[in-house]
Image (tube, rainbow, N blue to C red):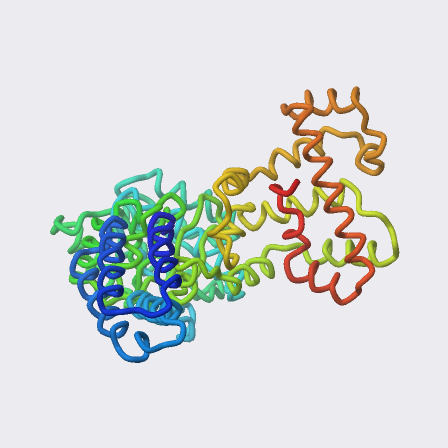
Length: 455
């Protein structure tokens, strides 16, 4: 998300940083480019006008124009205003109420509500240590109930059975009662997709809301629909007392206009972003971190949090101890590191959160697109245990067999072995420094030194 906007803004500010002193004309010209970049990112026009006006007013002030580093000062103003636009800080779910905390999920059909309910259940289980029950009040689509039942098993949530011949209000009330008896901390009620102009359907969800009085009423919006997502969020907020928005499919949205517009237009915070198809592909929305990523300054906090959640710390510790004892780093270890990168969404996802990585050459970015570590893992999987333990024995005939078995070429096998050799040398050096090794392995699972594009 924000790929195009980030590139445009970073290009604009690069020009400003090259100026020894900024004038009002310099700033106004830069703001025209910022305005165009935001409009192309599908940010709502009223939001663009307000944002540019606020930035220009502050940027023309003496603190910026008279600054020793005026370009950096303008970037700080833009960063602060982006954070303000998106909501200052992460707006967490209110989970302190008497259990079970009731969460009602609404949205248009096709926005990804049911999948989001499952993702949210897993998030609450892993991050908040909550026992979650899910229930479907979608009586119009039998497949929705079955889908939620299947997904609830994947995320280990308690499923409340419902049927299409029941009333949505009854399903919701019975689910809450069952959640109390089961000792659940949270119960999430999934609802049917509906248009805000459908009076009968809106009356139905209003009745459900009135009957269960949820602590959180979340609207699920498809970020790919841009301003439509903003407009439907606003319309639903006028009908229901929403407490927040979950933006889905943000991994496929290169513009990001909805994320920048929703808070300003609806007054409601974005609480989560859906960032992929996997059940763990849901992340809390942090305006400050996202602003930093847009401006090319990375998001180290999210990267570290993700590493803490997804890295296998036992394996990382075992590898650290192995290297500390002077035992070699082999291809089995290299594969483990590649799989750790895979767990964190692939190298492209990790680079997106690292400061300065937006300035990588285009050919390097192309190499990390599409999770190339999958190919490296396939190559290693095609080797025998003896080859993984003793890479030096891998000669021409073995390389041909490995390439055929992994669906790659001998050249790719050679490239992988070269990358492994570089990683091996680095690990040998790291193994000599206990503190450095612990920091590398415990912090990021040793993933970063093994960037697939090296070599």
